Length: 135
Image (spheres, rainbow, N blue to C red):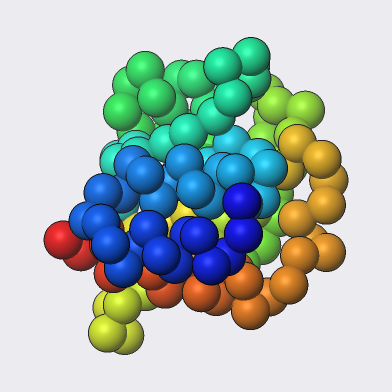
């Protein structure tokens, strides 16, 4: 998966689930989009991926108190956080369109390499997801 494929899918479809699958493939990690009320809107992970906070967010349809409080206290900049019940760090980033925050992208950094990814790729992905989330 590459950024061009993601952007092609964004331009040709209004399917947030497809885009989240693309993001998961692009960064080779589980991905989740949540709205401003911390409701899990869309997610994707490999079938064999097991992580308690990720699974509980999917089952309940919303983030845990711990995760929600981390997001609520953030300054809007992307940041990496470790959760109590997970061996994996998360990359949290705010999704903004037209200057208004609309949700968050959460990437589970299973390979401990997301911080080395190109910031321009993250920016393009986050912008597209924010616009798609508004639909």
